[in-house]
Image (tube, rainbow, N blue to C red):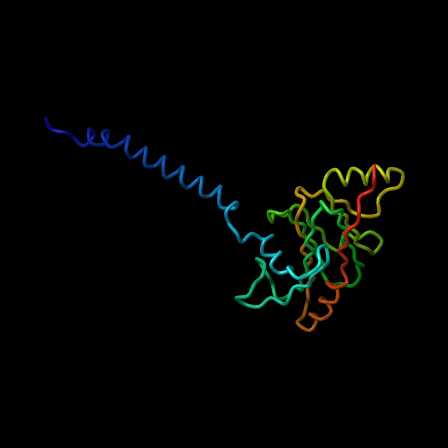
Amino acid sequence: MRLTLPDRFFDYLPWAAATLLIAGIVHLVSVLLMPAVAPNTAYARVLRVVAEAPSEKLVALPPAAPGAERLPFEDPAFAEGVCVYDLSKGLLRVSTAAEGDDFLAFSFHSGGGRLYHAITDRAAIKGKIDIVVGDERQIDALQGMSDEAPPQEVRLTSPTKRGFVLIRAFAKRPGDQARTRERINAVNCTRFDPPKD
């Protein structure tokens, strides 16, 4: 009895299907586990940069240099600062004056590094940027305390207790770097206690 090509194909088909299934499972598991086992997350990198600084205070990052990027997507035209927060210790208030023509951006990241909100200086209320970050319970308590008057700040609910705020100011020309660094240093990150129920 002689095997023909279709017979051989059907003999190897279960082995080929099993090999593809196992390879697919291995790849899927490795992709899903990568964020959990990767020690170099954005939050971990930010913590290394601000290790010596006090908690919830703004830390101005040094200028970006080729090959020495501390955070992903650094641009030498931007001055950068970061505030690391832990909401188990209280709410975080980020505030500054919205003056000048330079672009100023705030991006709010969860503990896993995921961006959950971004705002620019164009969203200033009465020439001032005032943002309060808290967890759902803290923001609800804050809302309950100020039902009568509309809030004068932007209130953000963080998906995690820990995270960071990345502040970037754009220098239109290389000579504007000193002014943009001053603008970054003018941002205040302060912790305050939530209102009592």
